[in-house]
Length: 502
Image 1 (spheres, rainbow, N blue to C red):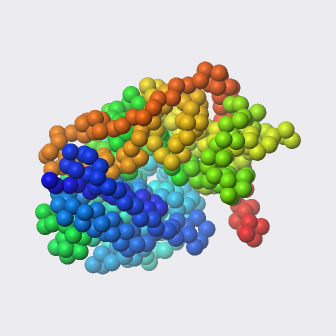
Image 2: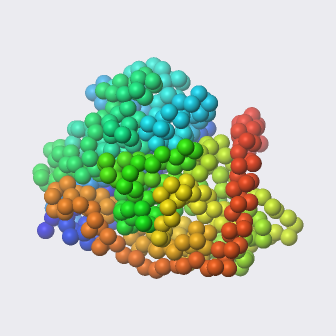
Image 3: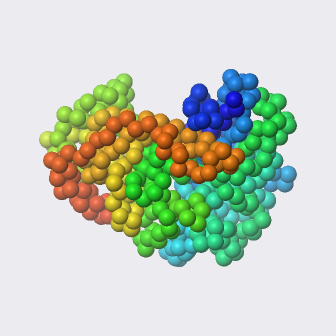
């Protein structure tokens, strides 16, 4: 029997799952690595550190099955940017989606209408996460480096190049750069000309299920593989984690909330939004990934647990306290923009806030308000998509933030939709494994993935709580818009007096 490894290159860790060719999970491993944050708004990673983690995971999984690995397929974080020089040597770290140093470039692009043009051509919302804005920032701040770089790629492309010697990306990852033309599924020539970038400096394009090639001989031995082990191109974590929970069309939405979060859906056609509220990334000419990513998911919950409560108190303690308060937190509203925000407001300078605080509010109300604010924000991230393609039948949820029954019910009540909990947290690697099956012609398409998805429970909206949330959500939105004009001033003040925050 042969086996398939599904790899997920995440922002804080890489994970690998060993599957039998029938889709049964055998073993999983994870190795963390640090973000490099030496400057304000910086968020980089060392590609070699990530490659070392990937190698160790592959070796440890492979040795348990005597190297009988038929394929390795990939899920990856989106929006990273790496510059390669002559002979493909590293000239930069991997600049991740969380890096906000191009925020001034984005602000100017909004004013000049360049951002709107980029969205119309590529459906990439205006935000520093997008490599198109990172490239403009590097061109402006480090012109010598920009000129020296021979290839611009992402972290998945770097890992696959190390293993196969081929520089290639797939349509889902290319879509996340803000440089892929939505209509032609090729690099946008007009946009590249506008930003002064030659198409030859970008990787060639392929399909997620494509076989890139076999592993190079030096890594066959080093990673305990066999000479026939194939590398499947794979896709973005956004796309794979969506189909990996059984969202294959617009009838249901995928909601994943870990450190950050996202609401996503698969649509049969490209959708444009005049307000630039959500992304629309092509998979192929018949499938499009729509949705909104948020910065502020479980990371805000962790902040609140350590700050509002004692750091020694557990997540369960926090939730137990929050559960003692009625829906609506007695009129206390929390905007969770502690790390700027992507969807729904697309403002890297956004800041968090409590609104409606009185002497009568105590820690329990603050605790519930934090949880409600995180979910209100996710609801906002889904709003544009719901308006454009219609209401889904249900939400299919995964992630560390949704482990408790209370939070699951909270989501059902705020979204006013049934919430279906998916047991498998490694939905991205499961979908990557199925991509390998399709690429090797062992499956005709990805639809059979639904049979491998284990649903544990369904949570239905509580009408009493739904009524409360229907009243308070418009207030949340109104305040959200009112504060938008002040975020830049607050951020400027904080930058002017940095020692006040030490």
